[in-house]
Image 1 (tube, rainbow, N blue to C red):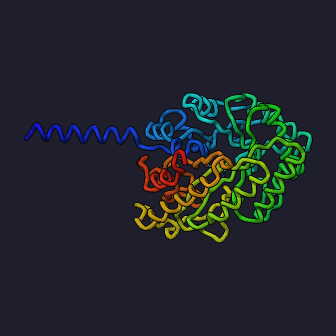
Image 2 (tube, rainbow, N blue to C red):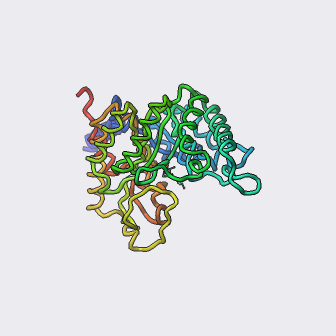
Length: 373
Ligand code: XIL
């Protein structure tokens, strides 16, 4: 009796082990369709967060630095570059054979004020700002030439109505700052893929602005490979029809489409305008934080369905959509816990606070096109 029990337990152990070894992974499920990635923080790319690193190396084949390559981190003062976090990020990516993304060269946020000002705090001239932009792009892109394979060259240049945002880049240089940024990046690494990245491109007016921008850049021979749709979405915005149309519209212009910062916000949105503008800051209120100690089953189910719908939509466009990157790995380190309201408990990703896969993880695997079909 004891012996047969031993055999049963041993048999179950072997079955369990074999099943664990054969667990499908995100990168394998979408192999031949698009790459799947995540944005990484320093604890992950330095090796301090081993639970997360196990997920990253098993599940993803592309990575983006959440903050390490933003101007304020990598180039805090005129003559000071701080490459240690970015070097570590790139090294991590190389060790694990990732398609390494650089984020981001020219943006109006997380860029120090000195970039736009002279020693007296007055705005610099177009010529000086272009020279600073050139130095920055040439130094940063040049350092990782051949290793960082794709760059978010310009981030968030558009307003919601599709017009060009009056950022300091725009005010001082004029609208050709975008074209210049792409040309400087291409000069520094002619092999790198170069992207325009923005949020809310699923909304028609803003999308039209982005389509016009890409069309103009292409007409001038500016080397742009693709458009990054950030994809900080909620449970009901954008619709899968809007996403579908967005992919189709950009594909017609001959550029690749990437979903570059995917997360799904399950919490109440505090005002009427859905956005990913990092400057938004709303006061905390318990009403805005309804699930501090766990997600109710009904919301978990809705999140699972939302993720399945999103990935089915992306997978309709395999090859046109070349990458889907999550903005983080597990719920515990998502920026959505602190933005646009600080200190909330959000559930936007596929792995929970204990780095365990959520039901949405399985739904995303299930949504993948069957191999060979
Ligand atoms: C966010 C980071 O996740 C935060 O850690 C940081 O404090 C602010 O920026 N659009 C982008 C990303 O392009 O760089 C932003 O990342 C999220 C919105």
